[in-house]
Image 1 (spheres, rainbow, N blue to C red):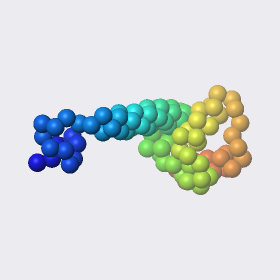
Image 2: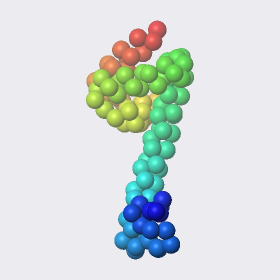
Image 3: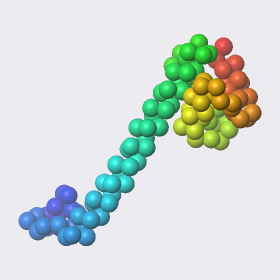
Length: 109
């Protein structure tokens, strides 16, 4: 019977060092991906908050607006979210993002 942690290995036989190294590397990669996802999620949530306050729309509509702008400009959602936050702080938006933002907001009214 194979060990569940290490397929193909018999129970009672310890894992090989190579197997452990590979598992540690895989866990490190997964950890990095999860950290990026958490950071990205926080930025998206902040941008939704900006849209809720500035455009007087629901959080659900705020996410829809971000998603539509992202899709129509072929830009990552987290990048659009960062731009929206910076815009709320006084930075300009690229013309394509600005026009898609206005169009997406108009569809919510």
